Image (cartoon, rainbow, N blue to C red; front, side, top):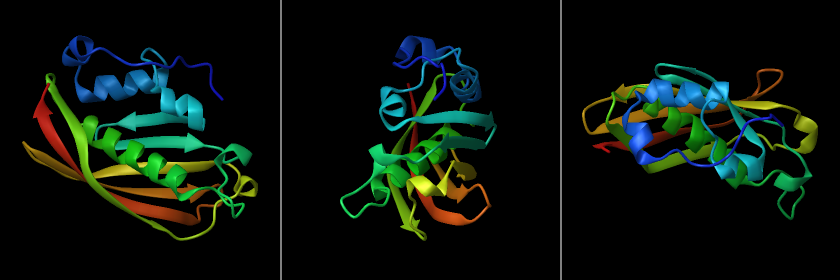
Length: 156
């Protein structure tokens, strides 16, 4: 796990930044990651306009009763990378929130899977709505899960 700080960024501070500045601040540690990232042990590791990568290493804390990683963990990683990808395209004063997302779980994820990466890519970004896709892959490049999201873009 990284040495990053966790918490929230005030709305006033967020208004002063472009979406890309915000997401890059999460990557470089100048802004705190959300507290869910600490709880689930994931990190935002790459960001450029329209593309964000979230990484994690599945462990025993992520397991469901059947002994595989809970689907909600994959859903959180995908929601995060896709939403932040949309965020990375926003001008100062704008924000986004998830309206809906869909995921497909293709392969079981276990602690033996090793490090995984969730990459979100923007498909479209209009004045009010943005869409993105996300893919979770393992260290061998195998597709474990994928999804799409629709986000509302609004003035902060």
